[in-house]
Length: 116
Length: 116
Image (cartoon, rainbow over all chains, first blue to last red; front, top):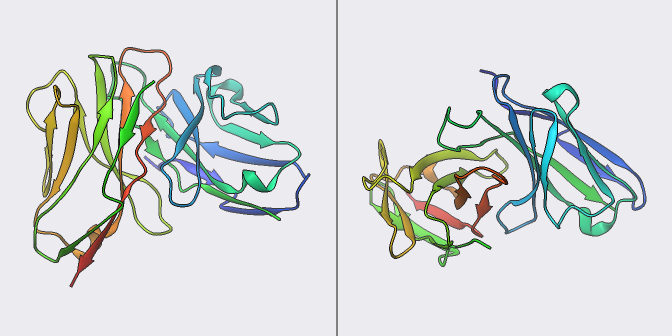
């Protein structure tokens, strides 16, 4: 069990540029989640996949944000035309299929985005 | 919508002493999971303990235990024999267990300081 991994760990970009983050979940987990965490706050849910299907999107996920999970394995989160307000830690988590756990999610180390 | 409230932004405890972190939540559901996560400085979120709402028995994991009061919608975390490595942000989190959107709802966190 290698844990959830995320790449890159840090990203600095200029306002208006596009960025893409990658998340690799724990191999036997079919559920994958994206969260955003700003300084001094708890993580906020963005979106969630079960296998390759994106089943829920938060109202926080504006149309500049898009997430994919092709083939139900790794996932990418893209932010287009970045704004300074997008600066945050982007966290990925994964969990086992329903009935195989108690809903616990396992988190990756996060990608810290700084928009200048 | 469900909410999670942590009313203690910061707590301080002497090493080897016991500390209790408070959490209250609001939900109209009867089936759900509650969690405590630990986030050390610049490190990833770690699951500390979980509680299924249908279980009356309070969960325990070594030095960590919870006091789950379902009617009062309260879920506190007790850390016994505090150690320097316990210093971190602690987040209380909720998720509905009935399927559908399973994103975690987090509180704002409690910063735990361990005094040597």
